[in-house]
View 1 (cartoon, rainbow, N blue to C red):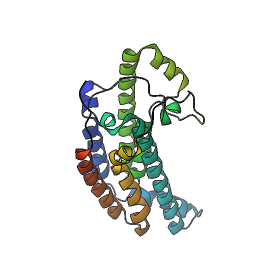
View 2: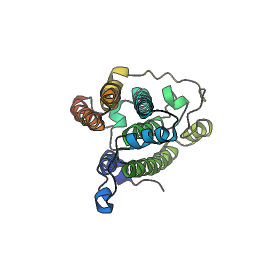
View 3: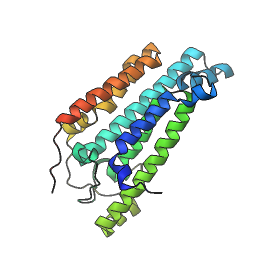
View 4: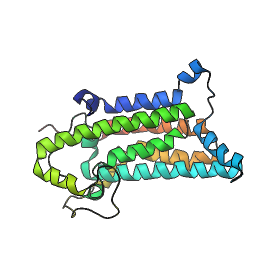
Amino acid sequence: MKATPLEFRFRFLILAAIYFLGFAAPWNYWLHLDSIRTWQILAAWPARSGWLSFSNATTVVLLFGIVCALTGAFLRTWGTAYLGPSIVHDSAMHGEGVVAAGPYRYVRNPLYVSTFIHTLALALLMPPSGAIFCILAIGIFQLRLIVAEESFLSTKLGEPYRAYCAKVPRLIPALTARIPASTSRPKWPLAFLGEVYMWGVVLSFAILGWRYNSILIIKGVLVSLGISLIVRAFLPKRQPP
């Protein structure tokens, strides 16, 4: 069930490959399926039922995408502010101690949860078959990464981490903090720089979305990805112990 060390090391490439397949949906060509976007499908459903006009339904779906993109970006940035982008983006697992601050007081895996929520926003821009594939594949892969990382931390940190796991939920954030706050302080500037891609996607949905053009938003997503790769190259690297 848990991901291998090789999968963890190349997790960002694997995630990128899953997203690419979701957008491309090459099986649509082989099976002669329609390439209409999930956004349009979801908007057409309440319109056909007479609940909303197609225009209003389209706006509702767009707002859902904006909320998912914003929630994912905020939660991931919040988590990165306490871990640091050098650890978040590192190819190796780290376990220097239990992080009992920020979102980690409410949920054990805020970075993985935020990525899944982010995926729900991107799925709106994919063909329906690609969206289903992407959501399932990302969800399964994220769970395997979580099991691998929690197993690593349990072995390395021992009882303090197991006590933390007993109090803080794995995936569904608690409404109130489950553990007292630690003395850790967030590094917000580095966190925003480390997650510039996520905020670029938020802006793509929030600004370009009102043109009601999925391709335009996808271009914004790609530009955000390019900018993030450039910014990441200049972020401070974690020094080996």
